[in-house]
Length: 289
Ligand code: SF4
Image (cartoon, rainbow, N blue to C red; front, top):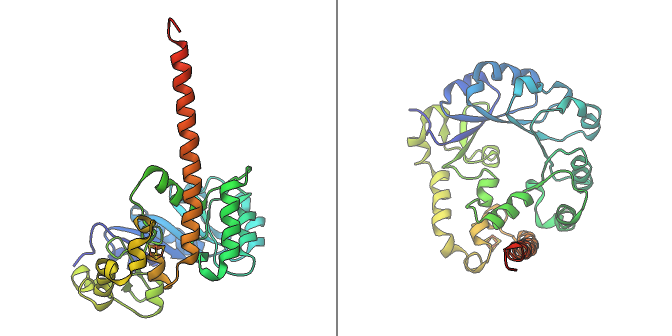
């Protein structure tokens, strides 16, 4: 049984596991050598890389080509020392919660590398997240986008259908995570907890009948009944209960959405004003005016 065509698998850099995947994969590894090997064998199905190794060992631009590397920053000094090696590589710096993650995120953004702080948006980091949001929205010399703020603002501005579940790759219809033994789960967290849907060889018919998969589906279908708060929330279209699902708390997310929404309204107002001035200018340039 082959995995569903639509899905992307978050899979270790393992040639045997990648050989079983007929669709697309985001490869996880801390080893540049391993990554080079799987790129040589399976590059056509690799759409992304999550890399936690030293920057000095990351394959170069010619090997990675257009593939985006989610660089898990474990050692700031290593990054600074090897920054030149990232030239031309599509990189997104993934910041994990920890000591002074806000300072680290700001510092990395000065190198023009886009930042991802999704994992840090937890109620206990409200102050740091607020500081980064302010920085992203108002720092006039900003050199790189901050995710997920940037995508949320884009989604609000352009009314696209992106949700936090998509941004967090937490949707088993689209993404599944695989461990070294070939166990499949709906996310990396679920893999760690041993909440398996089955083995990679089992395929979607088994995975989609497993308890964790059905529980997920039930959550998505029943959210309206599960949470009145979500149903009344003006940001449900974007969140769809993600923070309720993630931690049961969402004070910080609500603040993040509100602040970005305010910025979106200001941008809308500015655009309307610009359009008005453009029209007035066109009108005044017409003959007889
Ligand atoms: S922000 Fe909170 S209330 Fe609003 S949709 Fe998300 S989880 Fe529900």
